[in-house]
Image (cartoon, rainbow, N blue to C red; front, top):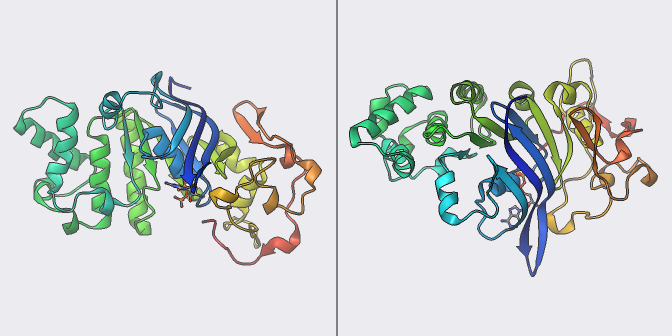
Length: 335
Ligand SMILES: Nc1ncnc2c1ncn2[C@@H]1O[C@H](COP(=O)(O)OP(=O)(O)OP(=O)(O)O)[C@@H](O)[C@H]1O
């Protein structure tokens, strides 16, 4: 594997609710290499976005502990001016909803130029040419016209391409895509994913791809981290994860979407608890697999490396099974 780009160590992100702090990201350690796509999957509320925002240090009021080392520089403790320099230059984010991420009152071209202005010394013409080149690179037809247009004049798919052009304007080494296709319809989703894959090759970025869609992960990721209730419960290479999933949560996610050769789906019991009610002791997934005996869980579950590069939290995976009574003919979706 190539050079380590990002190293997250014991990251804990807590939000203040009433007068207490509650961790939405709890002791997360991960690495990302250059040219690698790391998928992060989990149901809604499992802490994926909180993790992404913590890496970019975008939270206003959260308490962040631990380390987020990008090229060995710690984002958690970095000065505001260094952070501003790093965002949009060494790291950038593609957000879920392109409409809210764009300024409705500013022409597209100017919005992309703003990012260039912050990080690169360029003359006005050179900047405009660079923007047109970026629009072409992300597959926008008639880029000279689009340069003058406003966000509402473009389709959702085209707006997401603009967001991607902004994100890659300075060829960041780290690109975080938080559900980049959720707001788009299916055919456009595939085009945007193809575009992200192409760009990875062109700018050699490391990509963190956050999604609740296992199909997207299977297609795009090199490695996958499965997140549940603020913690990583399993990490593995993508093929290993799909061929030999171990953690009961990973298995539940995989069995709750239609699979070849299986006519019944597993229905995951309950929902991800809210932040105030997250179990903080023992296995956080225990309440959702009530048929598994308490003694199967660890008291303080940790990630174990069960084979090279394959990590699983808690021993409850060892004798896990799906009982017949929680299977159904129809999908219930995972998110
Ligand atoms: N600013 C905040 N203040 C308080 N609680 C928050 C804040 N942001 C997120 N949370 C809580 O943290 C938990 C994790 O949320 P997060 O948005 O990271 O989940 P997610 O996995 O990204 O879900 P989704 O797929 O719906 O975006 C949730 O319980 C959420 O309600």
